[in-house]
Length: 462
Ligand code: SAH
Ligand code: SF4
Ligand code: F3S
Image (cartoon, rainbow, N blue to C red; front, side):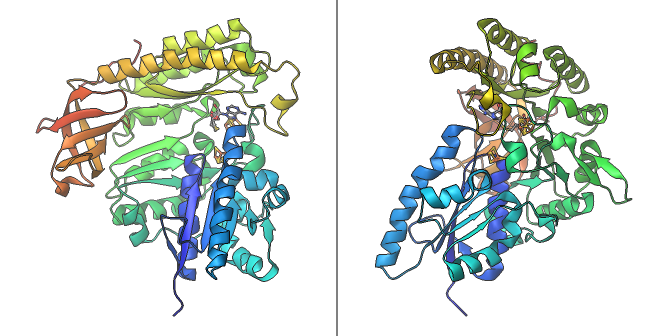
């Protein structure tokens, strides 16, 4: 038997990249690769990249500088270090990466991951390999499922991709180009994967997709299932106690999905529903195809279904043509909805997208200033939300040892980290915790016998 080869994978970008990295590791395991957490002693380094904003895309090149030096050091030791670039930068830039970073051996996009063993062989043979095709076969049929051992090492909360790609073509976004057209995985395959996770000790599953609520996979009876139907089936799987899904688009927030928030107790009361802007003029220019009133209406219906639902969002400031008045509409929407948290970004023109070609680009200084103001409002909302958690009792899923001996860290239903004095035997379990202290990014609490199923937490901002 050959020595195992060491694999180091680093994920940039979204949760789907994290999931993809795990699938790549699982696919390489039968080929003799074991994962290492240090790039220094690796035989293969895979950088799984993100192209969403310029800063994210440029990160890979600084990282490649470091990895190139590791490759030189390995060569001086008589070892070969193979460098692979995967993900959305690989898809968008292809050969350009080999030109800018000649130390790279292999470039391959998100639709080629199942061909990784073959691509590595090709790179070893020919010196370089590149694969950014969008094949017609389903990569999920060929990617290795997670092994029980791998799952245990990854903790009690797991992602499962149910939908990939996007047909929405928001004018700022590269995803439709890097991930390709929207594809949903069949229901039975997703359920089989969740069952494996449950058997290996996973308690919480987050269904992921670029547009997860556009999910329309083939069901067991041959008919199309919606995300709500998929969630209902997933909720029936033994061992799985919590379900989440991300990222959703407001246009695909169907009635049955809203109802699922009322009907499925395992569906956690937290939803990431990006709105991007509060200005209808900007929403139209972004090709979001809904208004701010549509968004507020969806929020109302969600909260009617699940009064303790906490909402988070993404925002872009300084999209071409954004005026102070447009920006004020965004601030107003944030106040009105009362998010429990949100990500906000300066608009970054991406090559090949319609937004980049628009003539009325906003000055960077203006973008920075608006970002600053928006973040202040978002942060205040998050602090207010956390303060309202004080004195409440939450079900906490214990994930790992805490900061100090005798402590564990878990997650509240709202994904907040909670530090609790608790025995290690509670790892992987859900227990009721009374929240006794609230800091900016985490909560502190004590185990309690009380039932966590208390009346709804009042909607933020309401
Ligand atoms: N599918 C998700 C978004 C995925 S990208 C959705 O439709 O909401 C994650 C976030 O990155 C987006 O919500 C947006 O806020 C931000 N983003 C995408 N492209 C961007 C760009 N060119 N500049 C700045 N932020 C961007
Ligand atoms: Fe990008 Fe829009 Fe698709 Fe989201 S819905 S991935 S923002 S194009
Ligand atoms: Fe980035 Fe690609 Fe995800 S661009 S956000 S890694 S889909």
